[in-house]
Length: 171
Image (cartoon, rainbow, N blue to C red; front, side, top):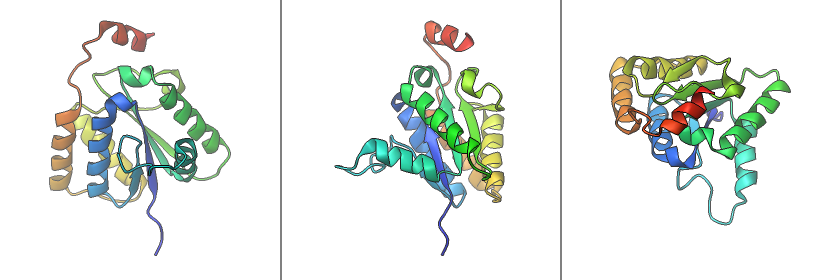
């Protein structure tokens, strides 16, 4: 039996609820494993967390980056993205970076060349999930996809209330 492909979700811990729901819904939609550090079971007690994170990044076939005012301030999101890009540069494997944003923020400089989809817009979120499934050569049923979108939309922030964060994201 072959191992399932692994997706790593890079996010700020302050966006953990969104990352958790995205993980749960993707695992219901497609046959993949997903690692994200806000899952309480992601790293067992007494395990070295940096070692666990780098092992998962080394194994991941795709990276999902959740862009928000919180992730802009997160050293770890930038570090995980850089680590994954460095790995991507040294392999012939088809590694992908999928970028989901909240409230329409543009991505930070290291991912400005990526097509970005909104995680709080029904149509864009649906397209985002479909493209992840397509990368792993899987198809989604409309009924399951619609349920997943509805559940993710419940936790995706509807707007950015911190004007200074909005300005930082524009820079």
